[in-house]
Amino acid sequence: MPLQNRVTPFGDIVAVSARGLFTGNRGIIHDPATRRLTGRRWTTRAWIVCRCDYKNVRRAVMAQRSWTELFFLDEATALSAGHRPCFLCRRAEARSFRENWSAGNRVALPKAPDMDLRLHAERLERSGKRLHPLTGPLDALPDGAFLAAQGDAYLVRDGETLLWRPEGYRRASLSGPVDGLLTPPSTLAALAAGYRPVLHPTAFD
Image: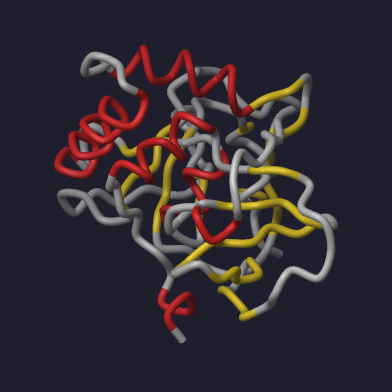
């Protein structure tokens, strides 16, 4: 039985057997005795996305009273859910994200808590994921952006949409109305300014 620790583009945490390219956390949200999630889905505003390999560190997943290991199909999925690159294990990417965030949002170079505060306001609406209105045509969205439509999540790449699934992407054109943007607007601005998130190989099939 898989643990409930895979994150969707909607920010939901689900139990699936599919593996992802990245890990990350939102603080301690599990009980190590049962390796199950508590009723909370975050205990810190610093939602980060990390490397799965770092200095040969090995952890028993959800087995200790430490941060709860979450997993993402790829970096674009994590960004859609409202996470940002970690300044410890992904320093170069975090710096690039911050620089593009600054340029895209037309603000001074932010500190990590500044980004966390803004992301926290943009990713949540009550207890669910906040959707944001489209401000332009779909083909103008940057690579790595996510849309919500009819209950599904779609990745934008090269002006096309790819249907997200836990195991990877499938080519699929939108056949109905778009419900809104999943990727937080401030992150979308960083993507538009040039930040390139890591995509799962199935996005290029």
